[in-house]
Amino acid sequence: MKIRLIILFLLPVTFAAAQTVKWDSTYRPGSYELKVEQFKSYRHSTSDIVFLGNSITAGTDWHELLNLPQAKNRGISGDITFGVLERLDEVINGHPAKVFILIGINDISRNIPDDVIINNYQRMVSRIKTGSPKTKIYFQTVLPVNNTFTQYPNHYNKDEHIAAVNEGLKKIAAKEHITLIDLHSHFLDSEGRLSSEYTREGLHLNAAGYQVWAKVLQPYLK
Image 1: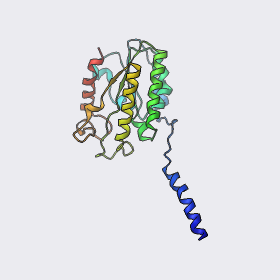
Image 2: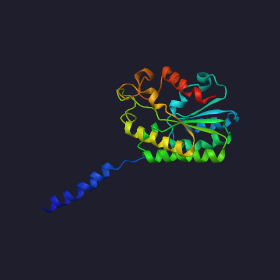
Image 3: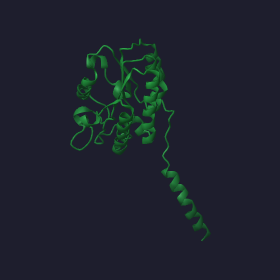
Image 4: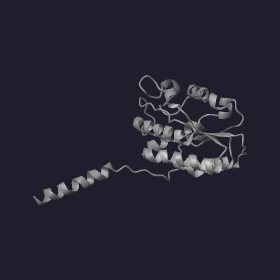
């Protein structure tokens, strides 16, 4: 009887521990330091149009895609919102004309809470407005994913988190009077997933996907 009581006492503790989801704000991808140093070494101009984000942003040549010489790619593969905050001064100090931000899917895959991601976006806005008040800020909603693929299992089946972050971005954009571009809706298939027409592995975009993105951006580049 004594042994059974001990087991009953331990079970809730073990179960509670199993339910604790850990996340790490200090994660930086392997290429992070090199890319940041490269970004700092490049020429900056107040006419720059900066695309800031992770591998989805890094995955194209914005200059070529948009036929826009002043487009600058500030995407780092694997980056999270904390990484963007850490390197944001490089963007701010250049006082660019515009900055388009798309970040968050890697945070979601790493179990960073939705409210923390949203708060990090708020911090980005506050810092850009303070350090470069003439820079126009554009939020782009987090893209959908497609769980019929298998290459990035930690990123799939997180639709509710993507939706929560995107809703948070809409609220910040409205409060801060900045422009929100709803990329997400342009990439959905009939099942509410990232259309296989625009991806090869359910997370990143293919050439056709970037063409869609470029078309959506056109009204905001004038």
